[in-house]
Image 1 (tube, one colour):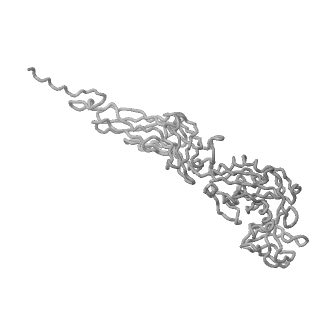
Image 2 (spheres, rainbow, N blue to C red):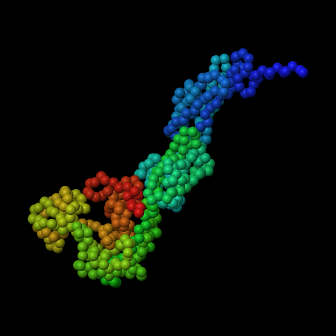
Image 3 (spheres, helix red, strand yellow):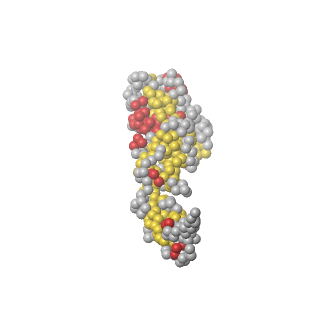
Length: 485
C-alpha cells in the first residue's frame, strides 16, 4: 500500500477568507458587509452598519458624502446615521456615501452605499375614484392630519405620490387594523391610486401607513381611515299653500325630488344618502287652511310649532317613517313675552327657556302701530337685555326671530326671497338637523352653516364651530356625529 497523501495547506485565496501561515497582508480582507436598507424618508433618519466577513478582526470605518440631501452622524464608527434633509432625491440612489475600512497592516477597502431620500404623500383621488369623503383638516400643507372615509363593505381610492426615485414596490401599504381597512398591493410605480377595501363595520377607524420594507418598517406617511354604515334618510317634500292652485307660492311647480342627485353627490362625503320624493304623486300643491287665513305660517318657537304646524302635519298623511318637509311661502317665527313691559324698560322676558338671538341683533317687537325695534345688548336664559324701549308691550306680544326653516315634524322651509336653488339646499340643511343630529355651524362651505349664504355644501370631519348658543366655542365633528343605526 502506498503512503497516505499529505493534507493540502489552507489556500490564501477564496476572496478574502483567512489565509494560512504567518500574519500580514494575507490576513487582510478585501471586502466587508453593509446592511441593505437604502431608503430614508424626508426629514427622517436611517442607520447603515458595516461588519466584517467571518473570521476577520474588526477594522475601523469612515463614512463620507458630498450629497446636499443628507447629513452623516457618527461618520467614524461601524454604524452611521444618515439624516435626510428637507428635499427628496433627484433620482433613485442619487445620494452616494463612500465607506472606507482601515486596519493596521492592511490596505484600505472602499465601498459605496447609494441612498434614496423619498417622500410619500396621500391625497384625495381624482373625480369619482374618491367615492366618499376626504377631509384635509383645513391644513393643505400638512397631509399627516388628513382623513378619508368609506362606506361599510365598500371601497374607495386614495392617490399616492412618491418622490425621490422610490416606488410602490418599496413600501407595504398597511392599516393598523386590517379588519377595518385592507389596502390593495400596488405595482412598482411612483404615482398611482390605492384601493381601500372597508370591512363590515357600522363605525370604525384605523390608520393607514406607507411602511418601508426595511426591517425597521418605518412609516413614511399615514392617514386616518373611517368606515361608516351609510345613513339613508327617506325624505318626502310637500308644497303647502292656502289654495290648491298655489297662487301664493313663488315656485309651485318646483320638483324637489329631482334635487336628490346633486344633493347625494355632497352627502356621500359623510357616507349619507337622501331618498327624496314629492308628497303629491303629480307634484301638485297641497292646500292647507292656516290659522291666520293667509299663506304665512306663524311658528311658536317655545311651543315647537303651534296651530299652523299642526294643520300642515294633519294634511301630510300616509308618509310612514319618512322625514316630512313642508315648503311654505312665508313664516313668522316668534317668541312671546311672558310679562308686561313698560316704556323705558331695558329688559324683557320670554316664555322660552332661552333664545337663538345674539348680542347686536335688532328684531321687531310687537305688532302693527305698537311695533318697534328691539336692540339686544345682553342675553341670559329667557331674559333679553336691550336698549330702552319706546313703547309698552303686554304679555303675549311677540318678538320675531328670522328663521328660514325649522326642523320640526314636518320640517318647515320658507321660499321667502331666496332662489329656488337655495330653497332646495335648505331642505338638506333642515333634514340635517332632524335626521342627522347636526347643529348649526359657522362655515359657508358647509350646508349646515347657520344662514343661507352658502358657497359650497360639504359635511366635514374637521370640527366646525357651532353657532349656538351665542359666543360658544363648542365644535362638532359632523362625520362622527351622524347616527349610523
